Length: 622
Image (cartoon, rainbow, N blue to C red):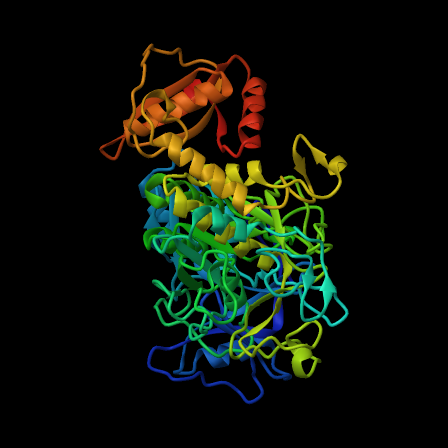
């Protein structure tokens, strides 16, 4: 079987064509596709296509696909592929992200686009474009491969989609799981089991509520990107805010498909309402923005994060991803996440969280490894590392989940429970039902929305916190659990900076808020107000050497606050580069002016240790 090599993420994918699967899009006028008998749907949406398994036949897959393509009910048909060594199906969406080499003019680009009969979808810069195949074009994977071979093209990446892993621990009756709401306040026992836990092994959420005098603000919006939200669940139905379905491109979220149930329990851990019934979320007053549809596609990734930003999400919780090295994040996906984390919330940045993953490996989910993301692992009701929780240097914090005893979470009404089990064991670790609306839940899928809820409490008391500050506070205030020897410079590959502590995190958010309300040079930590009294010393700097760029601002008041804070915290000169972009003034902040790149890299390590992101750059480039 012939193989096809295409660019994906930061490497190459070697693809082989499936001999049984096809992807189809239904025409707008058709209620259903015209397919041969015995062609079941395998995936309801993959890159905008429904994936079907064609019946066994003497006719090869090319001819079978051609036959269904000609049906009036079919708008588009495509082959389905597998990456070498993987059993995960993937499809090309039809878009190709192209970066031309410097010096390639627009006329040359247009000529090349016309040669392959492509459509220009979007021009992002003088050398970056998004193209789409037309009916006259070859297969988008073959087009991308051909473009990549040309000297005019620096990068040609086809937009592909493949199923991502939902990070819910797959429970079995023999597993040691979690229950009830001990994660909010662990008294050391599950009363109806009875089962004994480690008292105090919790996220200190009840203590945080007591410190606040309330359970958070309805002005905070928590978005969850996932699949399978039951919008009629009593703990979620009155909280829904600006829902969006990625596949129908509408506010109508699909309901009732038993294959998709993951989003409901995730949402409940973060934001389940305080209504006198059932369970309660960590931030029960926060608004709930369900974004239905997880996707590996570049276009879909951009859209899901851009939607959250544009619709006013403060926090974006994602309990899915991949650790398959064939499917690392491409620069475009990294940029989409970075854009949300740095430009959301009117420049303060959306707080983006990803599950570390449940594979039990020594590296985290590739999405969680993004430097702007809060990577969340799992610990148990005994303050131990959850055996399945991925480890790694990018891990930020861990939060309570299963591994000893599970957490109780909301259950979608169409959730069929664990296959092969019967009665209450389909939903409950010990077979003891706690109500038809709920089930046992766990994994890093559970830990991640728990931390998202804590972030919502922090923003409730101090909405001026930046995304970087929230991440830094969570890491700074986490409780060190496990052996002291597992921590190096305060960080553990198993526990991150420790088990998250909602009470201490809220206390620090309150402290910074109160300090920022003062006057004079005490206004330092909350970038965003642009108020206070500052002593200014301005001098021209030489454009030589190396520094670390930490941010860019459009408001000068914010610049002064950030400069003062950085100088005080790191003891290095802070430079400000002023430029005009699209008619607007942009202030870039660079810390340090070192003679060598290695000195700047050492400073970058110090910055990252306290949750501050940036990158090393040559001052001569400014």
